[in-house]
Length: 214
Image (tube, rainbow, N blue to C red; front, top):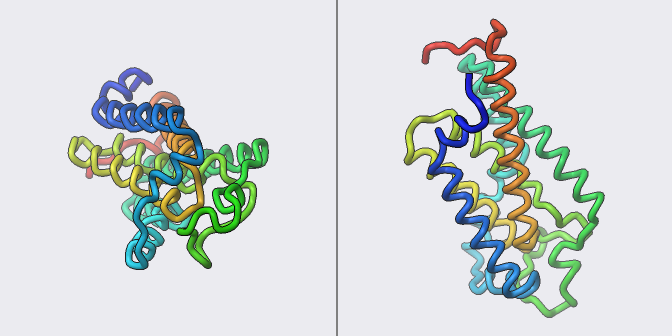
């Protein structure tokens, strides 16, 4: 059985790198402010990049998490499949609750018309569902579990970098501010760790979730 401390220590590289990402991002946000951070992180836009980031942002969509869930089901990795879908559902629910509680404007709603030139027609949304980023929440929940599942340190780093890139895609596409992404990463990681701990500490003894040889 694993304690929370063992889960963290066993994935020290993943959580250390995320901590650096989070605190550097937070320091930058507090230094320059919400609006300036958004603009400074969007200095270069091209049609090709727009297309690339539209595809990248899909990784934070519900469909991608469900695909991973189904893959684990097909391979009869019941515990992993259940952890993935629960982490997705719970982190997504928390994100939606916070969106409704805070009701903060998305960048296109926040900036005066014409003051920012890179919003993408048909992609960038208006509205008051900016905080936190739901896509970032989902991808960090998934990436954290996948990092915990693997023993390959390079794989752990790859999952984290992938999640960060998806988070950035939300800023690039004009859907969210940096703070939305940072909070989304926090929610995703916290939910994933707690879900994994619950399974290995409380439910692993159940026959359906008993670990199987690869």
